[in-house]
Image (cartoon, rainbow, N blue to C red; front, side):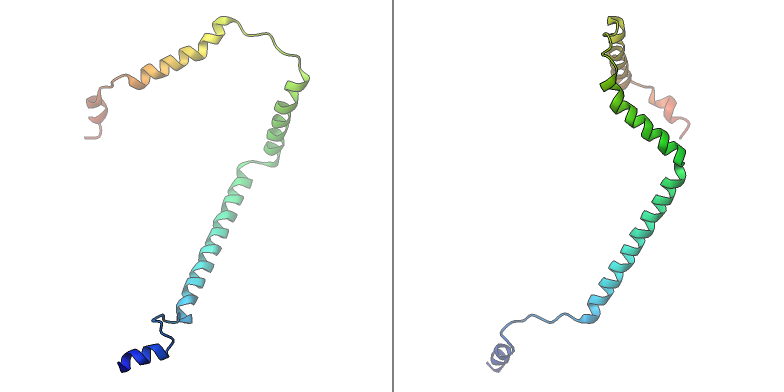
Length: 113
């Protein structure tokens, strides 16, 4: 009974306070992760800025603007010949046939065995 009274005097709950020492490693870990993410972002930014030059960005921007404006300015074109319309259909059929065509697995795997 004395144990129960002591527990009730302490507030009646069995919760324990968090140790402030345990919170700091999580904060430090979070800070290190944030620094690593920022470093990774800066590395990607450097790679992207060195991959394309300023001239390449200008060319791509002009191409995008021309693709947006030219269809509004130019007159509509006549439809293509009917034979040309069959080209994408034939390519699709060829790709489907090639996708489901059986291959000789033994000749492909022999170089790896």
